[in-house]
Image (cartoon, rainbow, N blue to C red; front, side, top):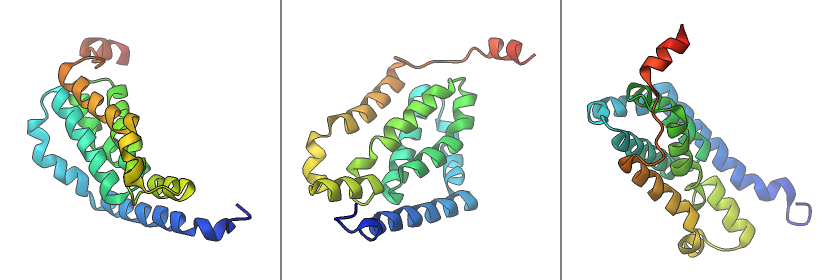
Length: 165
């Protein structure tokens, strides 16, 4: 850090984080994502559709804003009622937004992770993209598992009511 410019060399990455958090705060305060979900709420009737929608929301936020933590936060809070309505265990939502939000972040050239990796390695994001198998395969497998039901955990509503008493 000392020989390469210290804090000054990290200023670009810090600026991206601050701008992304500001935009995420606006999206959250204005309620834009929940308003968009209201339009497709009736179509989210199966676990596959809910997981696909949650992963596409996390991916879209990640690409548009470039901040992985905001894609997790905004998608998680927006899709939690949908997953509860479908009696899906919360770990399904957690895994979905992790695979579509956090893991994809290094593949977005203007994201914090993409900028850091490309500057640290001296390799543009588009050059290492074909070799980042884990990043895009985890997203594809999550969507596939959502539609097939493999590894999807449901909550028994009767057990949940008994435990609440």
